[in-house]
Image (cartoon, rainbow, N blue to C red; front, side):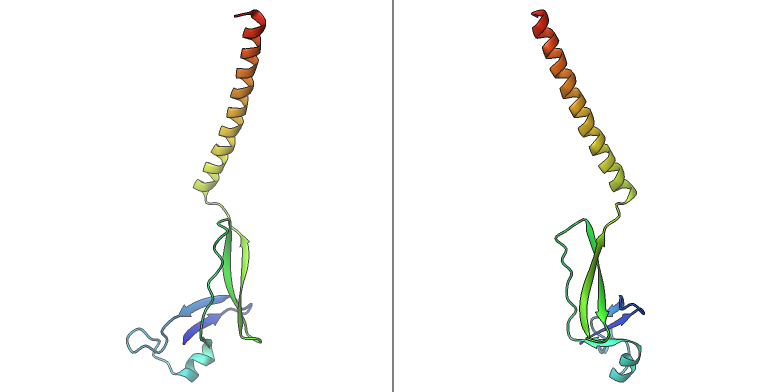
Length: 112
């Protein structure tokens, strides 16, 4: 048995995997826990195959079912800088290639 608490929109804010454990439990009875949250058998895992999204777990209080909402992940400042540098590098490679083609044409035209 696991314990969860949600906000008013059903977003899971707290999870406890051993709420009744004598050492690590919450020190509350079944009834006390049900007053402040929900007791569930399992908590599903999110699909983490897309590194560009983040998953937020929700619990439907009516159907007692879990679901995830996936949102685009915001890049950190370092990740954004890396992405910007990669884009700039790609542009510079294209320019370099174009310049090299122009130089080759000029040399071929001049007979060098």
